Image (cartoon, rainbow over all chains, first blue to last red; front, top):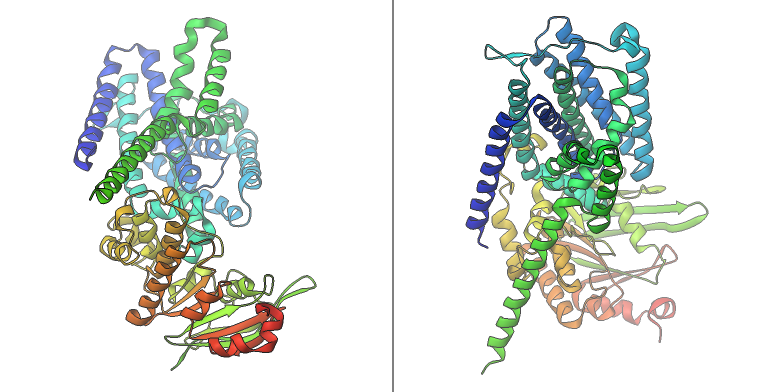
Length: 332
Length: 247
């Protein structure tokens, strides 16, 4: 397939997906729209984790904590009368700074050791959410988080808030696409694939690791700031290690290090359990079996299946071209 | 000719083991210095000390008269020094062209300007030239991981030259490469030296490769300099024959 044809196919795919995401909720009931909004919000958090883990190769079990920090920023500020945009700005800056600081251990430890460092941070954040009542209202949480008014239109109806979240997801998608297609994206991949060689080629691995953590965490914070008005109630149990593991699963199941991975992973983690409710009480068992089956079949996730198919096809085409070239040389 | 690299009394200890034990030498502009010696004599450790991958226990390294001991590898690279490793070090999930762009992108602008600048950091043309120079044009868009071992070796070497370095340190470039590819690699290195005035330091066990490429040879044994001189002199040196080359 030529480059132009591939580009046209990509544009067509994006247009169809966008049309579905805009039009389909018009037919959904309230709960369906709510779940779809949750997909949009959690996909933003997973995009952040995909940058840190998938592209830059830095294991993090703290993304749920950043969602929590963002959610508390939004809950505290908006219930005090601040606009959501101010809460989003604060969540982005705060999570960027904390993420940057959390990146420092990654300069010394890697893999499962790093996972434990980030796990400890996740626990620490949970304890702050639960115990620092003067700030977070402790175990009772913060209720009545208002939804914003955007361009004079209240987003209190689920459908309108969904469109707001979708718009934010689109912005994050474009910004992240720009990032991973820039030299930074290449440096992140180099960091993941071979940090020793990257360093010897002038890649300042220290700064890129910190940036990968900071940007990924900031996106987690943004997701949290959108999550709070979606749910209306922010309380500590929502931001335990389970959320971090769910986000990790979204990235792995979708395809770690693939741009579209978090979008598909989000479908599996957020929407699939809802679709499986037709089997009543067995839906979580079926869900777990499906996820296990998928990862056994394709450890590189859903996008990995497509990628494998495309690489196979390209290899076959290249082999055929080489064989044809050899034949034409051998022919007198 | 001025000295590009000055290594003064470098020592590197790992516990009680003296991997490098007081090595001193100079590399002059435009020369190809070969470093030979038996396995475990400290050749690669010496490279790692020069390039900041390891901190020497004692001694000093100067590049163009500037002390670089203690600097990080990425900062040393930006001073115009690049290297290859004993084991292949490429990025298998990037294409050949992307490997080469990556090898020079950090030399272009600032970190921020690279974020908002063009995807190829303005290096597409230079990458294509390098690909053609190393005769890899037909593989430019292939994933590096899909190349044969010899082709990956060529790519590995090409990456070291991509940023236009003044000094290149090659660690066993001929290891595992077949004769045809070896000739190709030697031709490319010679051409780089003659056409672009690049200076090399080459660690290698393949004596034919060393003797036909290098202008001067340094022999290490047990972490110390055993001999130094022209290739023919070194080959005839009884101490070198005894310790390394054999009769």
